[in-house]
Image (cartoon, rainbow, N blue to C red):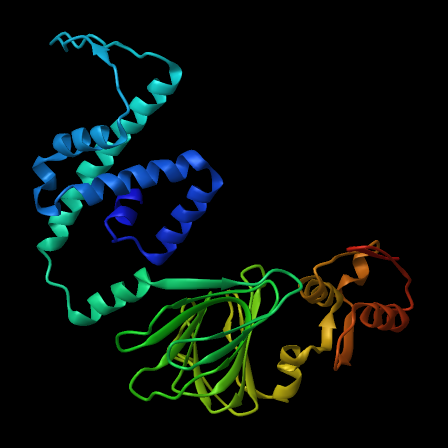
Length: 346
């Protein structure tokens, strides 16, 4: 993964995983940075035969002396021994070995890639991934973003969206975890696609809401204006390859079960969150609590687990936490206590 990252051939998911690993530990980040420095110093076309020279350049640049005393290898396969000045130098040597090995692989991989003839569209798609950006909201906050094509997005609490700095190629693609409202700029020559776990939502220009967290078992799409196509990338079948939604219709995707038929809804209730409201229509209590936790950055507990599936219905135009808690308690005839961010129903 490191060699693909350094040579610019990692997928977006690989880049994201490696960057998370780098953020966990300063030594992890330092290792990758050192490998990147070697890659920059060495001409790509000469790399397969010039690894040792690159390493010598790197040592001179860093001015870090390295002392290694080793015995010659013998045909009887005797073990080599090495003496290092201290434990810190020992770790540096091990890191150096890893650098040389990874860069040797990277050089071979790069040479292989130069032999391939890639189509122009594939090159454009790769370029798009290298410039991906990410917006993340914490619990209790929302955010707005405007893409390079003019598309406007409102991102709900505890959500994230990945998008390119500039849309290129034949498609505009973004990746959503959580909930977002999209107002897509019309472009018939460049369809807009939202990837949300097991679903793919494709439009040309419209206004719609996508709701689907990785931790949830379902996701939904509701259209306010225009027309969208929703596909399941996991359970697609010939009988129902996609669901077409127009203004005022919704579909759901349940993990492992595929897409539901389009049903008529009032889009205002599904997008009320963008203006500060909350809406629940026969929603199980555990899902209500989960939404409140995301919205207000709190933790909710209920001492009677049997009540978690009780349906709750209510609409809050301008949701305030204390108001919501009071309505829930009154509706279900239960009490609650609140200690800063912890709420206990009983």
